[in-house]
Image (cartoon, rainbow, N blue to C red; front, side):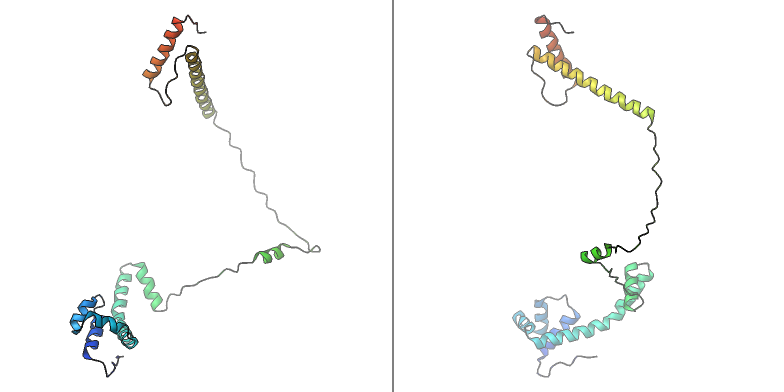
Length: 204
């Protein structure tokens, strides 16, 4: 199928359309240079519905002529293991049809009607009783270890509280917030002991 160009057309238009169809990546300047016109002329042609229609028809003819090569390439890709290419080939040949299933969703009012059971109707319910979940006893060793951890943590808290009380009793400032190094903690405790000794305070 060929496209018949209008008789009144100048050769420049035919040259421009041929280049636009065969080399769609070409710039407007390149098309204008090839046709021997200005870029403004090319832009004006694109505003002409007749020019656009002829351009479209000729492009579709050229596009249709390229389809066999495209399909051959897709078949080669499909044979090489390209799943997407295989799907496109099967869809084009009508061997694969996408099915769209639409679920029949009920409106809230329809759901309400379906839940209303007439008084005279007899309702028989089959209730399947599931077995009770077995009770797995906890590991005694694990419980003992957790208790030891809690006791150790509580012991550290009680000891830290006693040292704070001793520091406040002898007006020793509390350490800055944050984790202290063992050396910093020891130096702070030594200050408390020295102040208690100076004030003759006995610690029980």
